[in-house]
Amino acid sequence: MKIHCGNRTLDLSTPQVMGILNTTPDSFSDGGSYYAGGGLDLDLVLQRAEQMVRDGAAILDVGGESTRPGAESVTEEEELARVVPVVEAISQRLDVVISVDTSTASVIRESAAVGAGLINDVRALTRPGALEAAAATDLPVCLMHMQGQPGTMQSNPEYTDVVAEVRAYLDQRLQACIDAGIARERVIYDPGFGFGKNDEHNLALLRNLTQLAPDGVPLLVGMSRKSMIGRLLDRNVDERLPGSLALAMLSAQRGAHIIRVHDVAATADVLKMRQLVDCA
Ligand code: YH5
Image 1 (tube, protein in one colour):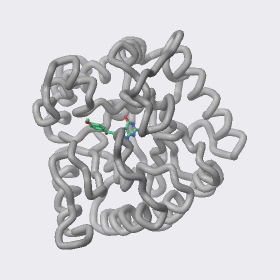
Image 2 (image 1 turned 45 degrees about the vertical axis):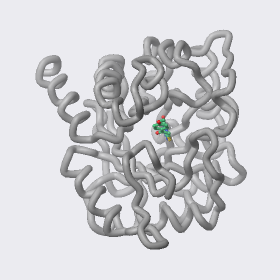
Image 3 (image 1 turned 90 degrees about the vertical axis):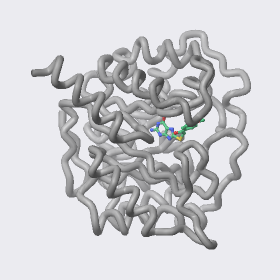
Image 4 (image 1 turned 60 degrees about the vertical axis):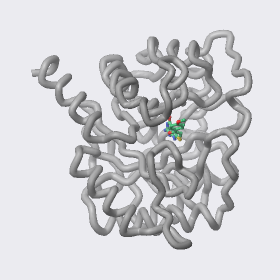
């Protein structure tokens, strides 16, 4: 399976690593922030981006909005200022697909104009103008499922059948994409681990990953360092690498095409080892 990301083609016949590049000033989960003095330090971001590419990331996911419960909401202007210069700088310097983690129409448009290769939206293009903006870019879109809103989604998530409900939502968003002129070949599904889900929900989604997307629609998963690992293993955020790697391997075994992680080198090793054993 191949997917066209602007001027680059991603080969998804083996699982690919997406490295997380957070440009929020409050980012606590990836062990650092790129803010110094009073602004975003582009050189620092570029160094980290370069390292992730050397470590084996096929995609870098640039995000300027924090979706964790309790996080400050970001204005459109602030999000543009955090994301667009980073996308532009990476696209001029590195050979990698740049994904933009955004729900905002203007960020979608302006990022695409400076070299983004993929739109990753945790709100599945439901914000006003987002669907139209994404359609106009010709780039692939990742549609993620979320129950509720970032601030409150973890208070008491409830499902009758989490796998069926997540699948039905993604199918409905796929149809909205098709109606807006986004070809089915451009769409990626993501069950949204931790977004309005308790541990049982997350585990049920992982166990049944293959049922979550129709044939030919790639699956992206993101569990790296998330709270589910913290709760299930009783680990602080800086102690979640082994759990994250286990989940990366398990998602690859269950058919994930793109794995979104903080620890690119370690994840790439795990996937390489799987490839050597299973896919020779
Ligand atoms: C995702 O799953 N997640 S942002 C809390 C953490 C660690 C990590 C407490 N954007 C996803 O990564 N996009 C985010 O520790 C995403 N899929 C897609 N497509 C949340 C995050 C995180 C939150």
